[in-house]
Length: 165
Image 1 (spheres, rainbow, N blue to C red):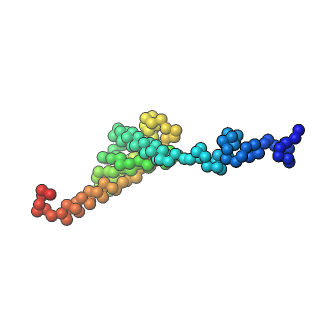
Image 2: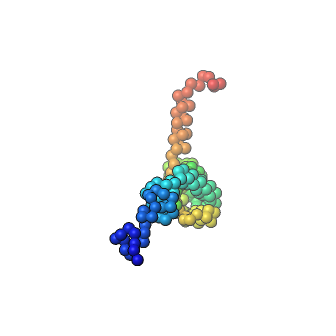
């Protein structure tokens, strides 16, 4: 039995020995060559991953907002979830919270949320059927407090003589 090209005895013919480089026939024989030549199969969908992560983060925020209200831990005060940032592989999720009250109340609330993260993760698993249930960590979000502080500063500096404008 004679093989073509010569010297390739015992090997199967590759796509480059059958068809010219870049042809459709070549890509049907060896899909990995499509990666080299940059055909449409290598183009990535842009924006789809970030849109999905935005929806996952929003769904996590909704479920956690509902479940935090049902917790019986006395350390947890008035909490608002300002945002959730899950990792792309859904192994971790950071939950940003704003707490009404003093620094001591804020620390106690974060400790209470940290100790009840298992209950909250179970609720996430029950409500959202994700591939993985992310490990929840809670962080204080100072943006609302900073917004209130800036509003007070603006009110102090604004002239009070003309209230109509």
